[in-house]
Amino acid sequence: MYLGIEIGGTKVQVVAGSPAAIVRRWRGRVRPELGGAGICEQLREAIGLLLDVPEGGKVRAVGVGFGGPIDTRTGQIRRSHQIAGWENFPLRDWLSELAGVPVAVDNDANVAALGETFSGAAIGSDPVFYATLGSGVGGGLVAGGRIYHGLPPGESELGHLRLDRSGTTLESRCSGWAVDARIRQLAAHEPAGTLARLIGEVPGAEARHLPQALRLGDPAARRILEETAQDLALGLSHVVHLFHPHAIILGGGLSLVGEPLRLAVADALQPMVMPAFLPAPDILLAGLGEDAVPIGALHLADQAISATG
Image (cartoon, rainbow, N blue to C red; front, side, top):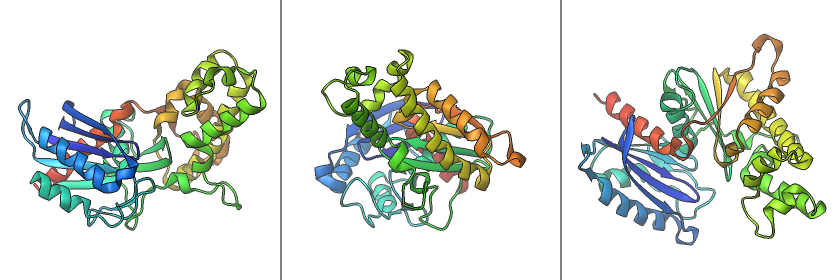
């Protein structure tokens, strides 16, 4: 029995269970105005409720996926790009004292990659690269069943890859907010279009309307999809040439566009890979949905216990 924790920019999840099954769950919404201290209070409440779970007995360890750069050697947060008050916070030590058990911490995209490798869409694949397309764009690499780390706090920062010399990043083109902005811009120029009618006058999360617009055959929606897929494939082509993954998983909110996005990225990636490395890796949609990080965190806790005997 372990606890798995996801600390993101919009939500906090704490689950109790094993890598095979979640038996209890706590979920809260982040209040940015309360900063890191507010999330600490949420974690204190959730861990107090879940630490002794009748269904599985005592918790042996805690795994954490944190939404930002973190030093996995010390368990110290380097920075949060979304929530103030986290810089240099000793997250691992604080949680270990709170829970009274060993704690393992890592970047949330790395942890999601672990979850998808062992319990999600990439079972049987090695290496596996995970790309999360949400409020930001992140990446994680699992090779030989373990998260790959460069020099701490090195992560697979896919979103910060530059697409040109002017500084355009993958995140500025393929994050959820970037696609939302393109849809709003398009709606302003084509107010009679299908996407404009679907999003209406309530701003926010415009990308969620892409699947329906695509089903209705909207050419503007198709254009936005193709542009996003081309940019994402360009970023992923660097991943292919550097790490040669067996499979690439698309996760995060934007991946809910589904099969049209997966197929468009796969088609765009193929000609971007040098012939010696063809065929390009399988492009797969995440299988765990919003549980990718919590389940990955349970695997991380399990690996930490196994490593210590």
